[in-house]
Length: 416
Image (tube, rainbow, N blue to C red):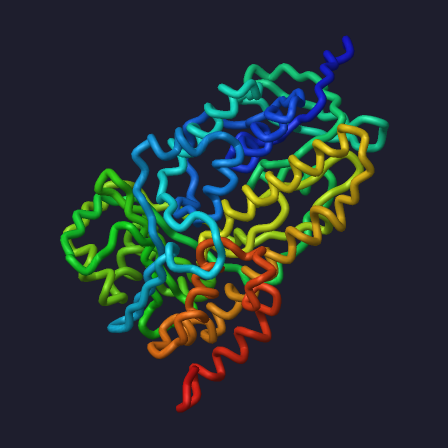
């Protein structure tokens, strides 16, 4: 058998989603040769549709903001929370941390393709329908085995590899980097509907997060799009699905019927798309980097969809890795643990504290508290807007302790 064709590139990125497109564009803008390998064909369906404000910082940095602004996506100014008769909202334009306030709610098929197309316009090569099937990082340069759509294969060597494969988690699988998540197994059932919402109290410029009136660990997302449709899903632990319909559409409709505010808001909805299921999505890895590679976004760790942090973490990691790699390729000595992994994890751990607080109920008590001090709400709002790396925000630097104290104060007669 003839040896496989060997191609050499400077940087190879696995995955053309948001983190891959952002990293590719940033590296190309700094003069590097970049090749992106993408298993699927774009556009393709994906969830994670409610962007946080911090995402726009990285989109702007990558030279893609004007294209995103012109695409007609649904403007998003914040997040609303509802549970039975309770309701509160956070406006991202009124937050503690400087930066973008408004953002967008997007159908990821068109959004991801837009970012990938913008990266290509800047000179990034993307090869669709190609899959990385093996990886060898033992030599002087990483080597990847790639399979094309027609079944033929070739080998790639590179100075460095960035894994932006998202849920595909290519290098964690191939290099035995998978680690169990600390979160329990949860299940999301979701769909897109023609929402026909005519309730004047419903704000299309905010994501609506609804809590089940009796099961506080069960929550729903309602993400309006600009075309009269919305993304709708329910998230619950696996045992919460016991005794419910096996049919996913019937299961989701039953959950929605149990939430009075959703039942009212979606009374006229047309359920025209079969529901889907994602199970056990939380993931972790043993390390975010190694000799010749680094992991971006969901390829490294995914917490939980409740605060829409996934795309923000992905883009943040892409920006950090691109700048660090630029320095390394320029001959500087860099420390991926201290300059990438640990700083990235500080923000991820801040998000983690509030996700844990959401499910144990303490953060829900804080969110719905009616007499909160405005400055504290602005600090919380910054985290909900994605600014979980702002070291000037005490609710970022000490998330667990601050949240614990705040939850106690909200529960006390004196209040905050």
